Structures are given as structure tokens and as C-alpha cells.
Image (cartoon, rainbow, N blue to C red; front, side, top):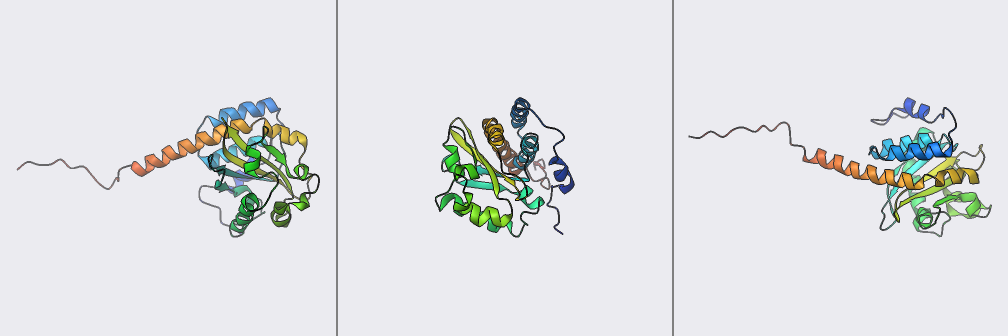
Length: 227
């Protein structure tokens, strides 16, 4: 049995992934826009966004990434849902990350995050992008199928011409593939999520700077005495 990670409540995480009712697209857009203005810590922001997306798009797990807007290289990964859902363990997740990076940057791929970032609509379903033959893609063969999550919906989060992050949304093999309606719903909030990630990154940097600059409480200022 895996020990829960510090600051992570596995019970709350499970309940946050159980949608209480379906939302209309306009409510999703409005709620995601408001959420992004709160400047939440990044992983908390991801959890909150994922819970809202599930009100419209059914899925088994999500995996979030930040991207360097200049190079479009992945700079961080939040794979807690893939671990919580048993797709990976803390021990196997790093190996999956290596395969992901290889499929993104070292082979000709379909729906790579960098490729999606340049599209007018930065959203893609793997099976459709592969012409109904996802088995022809490296990511599908080497990563998704062995992991039991063959169905993939992706998005890059772009605002003002700069990409700040991306998401992989997964469904297990016993479920159905994603639909055009799912992709359309995600496309409605890519810009708002990009703004939210950008805001979270700035607030995270400010929080880190504040912590770093905080004086050591063990040191006291003593008045000097004159002789």
C-alpha cells in the first residue's frame, strides 16, 4: 500500500473526481476563468481545473505539464492522478516520463504538445489525428497501451501567442474513445487555463521569494550599547 504524499489527501482526491452533475459549456468557461484569477499553487490549481473539466468531459485521469514558452520544452509534470488511479506507482512513473519525453521530442509524433501549441485550436484526439490507426504512433504503442490508457485527449494552453502548459486526459481500455464534443469542450477553456497556469506560476514564484527572504526567527536584533 502506498503511503499518501505530504499535503495530499487521497480520500478528498477520489471524491473530487466524482462529478456531481453535468455542466453546460458556458458555466465551465465562466468557472475556469474565475478560478484562474485566484493565483492558487500550481498543483492545487490543476486539481481544481480537473474537477471542473470532469463536469463536462468524462475521464479516468489527467496529467498536467508546464512548458517553457520560448522552447516549448516540458518543465514540470503533475502526474498525481495517474498514480492515485493506479496507472503508475511512484516507482514506475519516472520511467513513463522518460517514454513521454522521447515520444515528444525524439521521434516524429502525432499531437505533440509543441505541435498543438501552433494550431489555431490547440486540442487533439490521438485516434483521429492518427487517421483511426493510433497503433502507428510511438506514444500509443510504447506508453499508452502498456499503461492501460489507450484513449487520449490532449491540449496545449496558449495565451497571447505563448504556450504555458499542456494536459493529457486519459481513458482506460474498458471505456470509449473521446469524441469531437469532448475536444470542443476542452477547446473552449484552453485560453483561460493558460492564463490560470501563468498566474499560478507568478504567484508560486512570489511565494517562494517570500519564503526565501524571510529572516531567521532564531536571530534577534539587539540594540547596541554605548560605552
